[in-house]
Image (cartoon, rainbow, N blue to C red; front, side):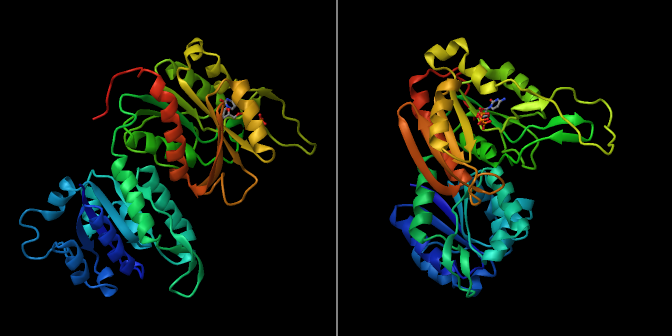
Length: 409
Ligand code: CTP
């Protein structure tokens, strides 16, 4: 089975990490526990040692520990680095590449998949700095087991409690099983983010897409071994390591970037919120205001997904096409008609009238609409929604031969 490094950091949830170690052990895995200095204030290393039957690593500079540069040795031999609980401090260190103790050094040194289960006070979890660090980590391909909601040890009620040990163990199992390179040899193009349509050199028409859904899809497709091209509109996000990134600004740029590359793809996922209209005559110089109202004439942009749906190869359902539909009402009905109109294989429909899902937040609730039916995916992290979308996509791909036998190392 697998060798798992279990990082335990200083939160009250550290006691639950004992159960996580036991659960992994029961499933036949070898666990090496790594505790930060603050974790030791909550649980003693002996507890983990008794369960894992291995020496617990508590100090990077313990005599002997560096004789074989242990964090490098462990980094190259583990199959998974799982950190539970992961405090705000640890997230910050991982996101920013600080390596001032064994665990953070291990994170920067390992190429094994990384899974974190954050746990902290609700306000800390919601703080923009923590949210940003999480976004950075997700974009980098780190898997997140979302914290639960409820009564917190600090007396507050809200989101921030470490996920239940059995859920963390199950997520780790799924990840370890998913090591299979299910999309190896496949070329997947993903569009993400908004497009900006310039009115003049300083103003534009845009939309509220953050790009998170598309970046999460790219990270997950890479993890499955696909060669990923990420055609991204303007976003604040860091592209996942390994993706070929094509940065675009307008719908016209995105159209060109996608069409130039479409023929070589096994699948194209249009998660970008492409502008439907663009200023008819963008001004070359800044437009000066006067007292009266202003009228902006907009013309339709090219429908990229619609055009892809009419490619000659689509008669054989190649490439597999996935579109998105952001609606505020009659979500599934609109998605069903979009599936037909655009000639897509799947439409991922989301209700953007919800404040807890969709734009600007890290979670989404969607419906996967295909000719075969409608599957509701309840509210969960965008990384988890991305995995569901790609699971579905793989069904369509099974029937289609790979466009290019190139397999990513
Ligand atoms: N899309 C596209 N090219 C465009 C506009 C949208 O490829 N010029 C893609 C989006 O990436 C998304 C899907 O088409 O996958 C959304 O469909 P669209 O017809 O644009 O729907 P909305 O604009 O969201 O809705 P409506 O039809 O109500 O305007």
